[in-house]
Structures are given as structure tokens and as C-alpha cells.
Length: 225
Image (cartoon, rainbow, N blue to C red):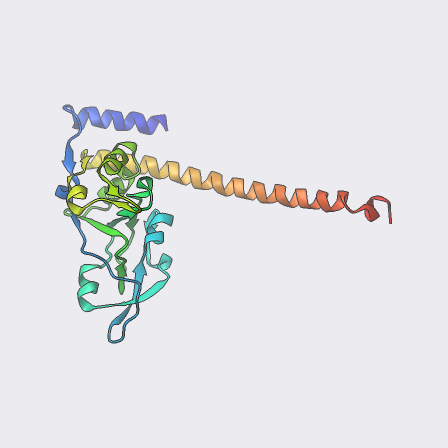
């Protein structure tokens, strides 16, 4: 991992000798219109719905994770569509810390719309690497501090679109974005592998415990009965 970091630092010194440029989020992305609701209405076409928990539970959005079915108008199919590289975030939450959870669409998803509980960011210059980079930025402490400072509410917190638009984010040249995304993807993959190994180990230990528990507490067997 030090190699990756060293490569990124070298690229920054070469491509950004005066420092990385910061831009307002609204200069980089368009904000989607209010999404569809979770209802089925006569006279409307059936659609898959990307909902709040889909964004919370997944780093990447593909058709196979969309399970909820609703109906939508022709206008909603056009304005609330899902394209590869779209970044979806949670715009509100009961706690400020859960605002801005992000996920990226990995493909164009036909006959699908997003819920009004999520917000779509679509980069003005379509580039999948930039989309993944922006999604990772939403996990960073620096951007989260901006979001939590700007959030308002009582029982549910959120930001107005104008506040979202004014959030300042670092935008290095594409080669640096690409290297950052690859590095963070590698960490994510390692984390997933470790979690899978730990789950398997825990399951094995659980079965071992159950075996010895039942054996040691079965006095008929211990007595040879």
C-alpha cells in the first residue's frame, strides 16, 4: 500500500505543483429532480425502485440489487433515470453522521427510477472514474465535516440543494483520481476478504462450541450410558 501512496504523492507533485484544485460540488455535478414514491398507481408503467437502503447497503448499484417494484410516470422515467456513473447519496437522516452515504451505478438500468428518499448526482462530464472518486469523497472526514456543519433539522437532518451545491471538494487531475480509486478499491477488497474469513472462522468456532457444550452437558454420554 505504501507503493500506491508513494505513486499518488509523486503524481500530485508532478501534476499539481501548486496544490490540488477545490471546486464546488454544483460545478461538477447536476442534481436530479425529486424521485418517485413507493406506490403503485393504475395507468402508470411498472418500474424497479432504487431506495434509501439500497444506497446504504451497497457501494455499487446494479439492476440485480433492486428488489422493490413501483409504478412511475413517463416524466419520472425520464427525469429519475439511472445511468452508469450516477452517484446516489442519502440526503437526509435521523442523525447527521448518516447523511451523505454514497453509492455508484455501475450500469444503465432500464425501467428503473430512484426514490425521493435519495438524491442523484450526475457529473457534467461523464467519467466513471470521477464518479467513483466523488463517491469515495463522501466517506472522507473533510467532506463529512462540511456536511454535518451545513445540516439542519430537529428529528431529521438534511441540507438544501443550494448547500449541497456549495460543498467544496478537491478535484485532482484524472490520473490521480484513478490511482486513488484503485488504491481504495484494493483496501475495500481486502476488507471484504477479511470479513469473509472472520465469518467463516466464527462459524467454525460456534459449531465447535456447540459440539463440546452438548457433549460436556450430556451426562449420559459422559457416564458411558
